[in-house]
Amino acid sequence: MSKAWVLVANHTHARVFEAEKRAGSLTEIESLVYPEGRMKGRELLSDAPGRAFDSKGQGRHAMEEPTSLRKQGARKFARDIAHALERGRQQGRFDRLYIVADPSMAGSLRMSMSTPCLATIAGESRKNLTTCDSDEIRAQLPMWL
Image (spheres, rainbow, N blue to C red):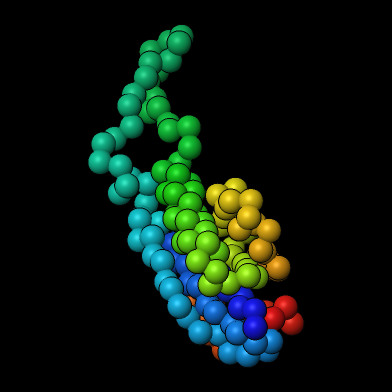
């Protein structure tokens, strides 16, 4: 019997569920948390941004990071999730993967996943259901499983 995993994720929390049969219940098998994702950019950086002079005139302004620290953190968390999924795939713990993630996390996940792991994706929904219990999540899923 083939096993399916359902990943429910946003930029701060990811939950992995296992489903062994169609229309059956989901069993949570792993939870990943990224608490820094809830922090403000200033809280993530210990120093204030640098200051620069305008090219003409006497004005000064703060220099900004090219990519926000929150986005960098969300990408790192997506890579951590992708590594956990890859380990499960290599161990043969699932052969189908269903992703339920908010839109920004879904894109980051796809960019972080290996080609063999991407090939296991059987369905995707762009919703944030991380705070729902397993029955609510199952009810929100199309009849994929």
